[in-house]
Length: 171
Image (tube, rainbow, N blue to C red):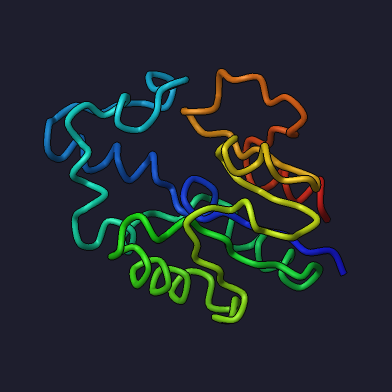
């Protein structure tokens, strides 16, 4: 059975949408994905660096549409692991685990890996939104489109725009 390493932020959890909601609430300005193309989150949302440090940030991120349904199908077909960089922000460890329990209850704790870097991940397929995680990976890679990577040439990575495209490719 092939193994999938599946990222959380920007792939399952709508990190951009969460930043946009918080920024609009605080500043009264709605930043749209097309306005943020090619920009990192903190470039797209100036002065919003504190959001990620606020209690509840990771716990309250919205779910990316289609992810629940497709991930459950993948979980039943592949050896699927959630692999998330969660050590940089200590509160994210607990909050991400709680978020996964709520939104993806079919994934047991034994299939969740929180780490600092994904360079050590051994799998056949990696789905992620960051080149820093996909570039060193030697297996099949799917680059999940997000505003920060949208303008970049995907290189050897296959770009996917939503979960239904992933379903078509892998199922």
